[in-house]
Amino acid sequence: MAVSWWQLKSRVKCSVGKNNLENCRVKASKMLDLSSGLGVGGKEQALDDDADIDISRLSVVDRDAIMARVTPDDSTPPDAFALAQNEIRREMIDRGIQPKGFYNDDAARLQEEFNREHASEKDSRIQQKIQFAAKSYLRETVHRRRLEREKEVREEVEEIAKNPQLEVWLGLAKADETPKHADLRVSSIGARALCKTLAFTHSLRSLNLSRNALDDATGKWLALLLKRNTSLRRLELESNCLGPLAAKDLAEALSTNEALEYLNLESNPLTDEEKDFSGVAALGKMLGKNKTLRTLNLWRTRLGGEGGKQLALGLARNTTLVCLDVGNNRIATSDAVSLDVQLKKNRVLFEEQQLQQLKFREAQWKAADKERERQDKLAKRQEDEEWMEKRKMEREHDRALLEEQRQRDLKIEEDRMRQIAARKAAEFAAKAEMEKKKKKKKGGAKKKKK
Image (cartoon, rainbow, N blue to C red; front, side, top):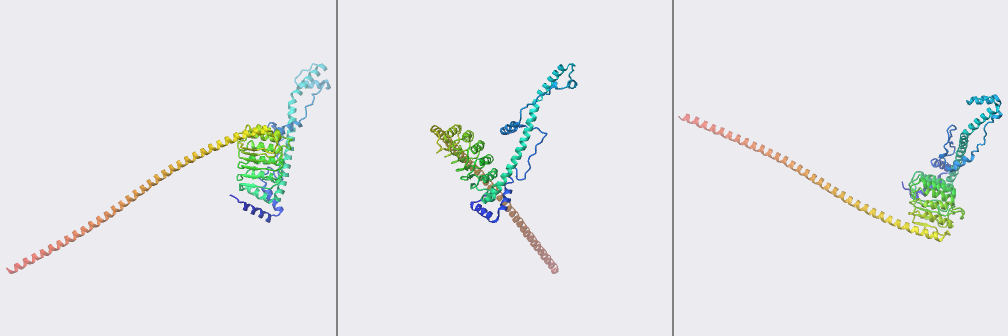
């Protein structure tokens, strides 16, 4: 269902006029129930104390944090020489060793056994420490993340309650009924709530979040949007506060994204005043993997010489980007030339692809026209055949009617002829009878004369 802009504005006005702040908070809480992984009052995920944790399936960060909690194994084996003769004898018999009866000899032999057992159990002790550290770390992590999610939801509820336009857009996104283009003024918290919901929307094609003072914390939510959304084609993030962390998050998402064609990061401090080039390096690596991005605007993003170098290295492995704006960044001339050369190659490939696609579409159109003509001829032939069959049946019907009429006329004529014949026969019989009577009368008269 398409929603026009004037309808959207009317919804915002209606929301402001009819809902007080508390009602807005309640509605916002309902809007966030699907976008939040764990809402306020949610239960922590229980860990089974008896089950071992496979730390190899955890992230590198989590594994490192767990291993940092594992203390070295500084335990020592028991001292056999600290035991009495009877205790040594009992320990040796329990282990299937025959005592010799000499204290020093038996103590030395038992100490060897203690040392061997201690060494063989070392791996088990370390694994127990690792499991204890892992379970402790994961409990703390689950609890911390729960608290973080609760805090996020509270912040988002308050933000939505204060921003009726955001409330309307979240409702439209949840119903997958947004207009194709969105140009919004939101805070970092509002952008976070928006990205969570838009991640599952298919109606939006263009999103403009420029000049909203969005920070690095928003970067991971923008990345979430790009990882999950498959319909967004254009993303405008001009004049925000996105730094190296946000650049890395966006680069990671774009390495797998197959929908976005235009990204504008103009006037963002992507290198933190040329102190941290990790984000730009990630963007450069992303260019070697992404196959759908056509335009990337990095104008005045403090790239510097190192940033230009990283982009040049990444673009050398890219064949699809046709427009890269790196103006006002003080990149090296050699890198600028490399970028320009590669972009020209990409544009040639793009034009060739467009030409091939055009030819392919023209071939499809011609094939479609031929198929349509063929179908039209078949339809015309079928129509003619149906018409001829219909006319044939009509003629047969007419002939049948004519034959029926002829038979009726013939029967009527036969009846008429029979009636005529019967009348003539009756007339002939009557005439014969009259003649007979006349003859008989004449014969009687003659007899009287005689």
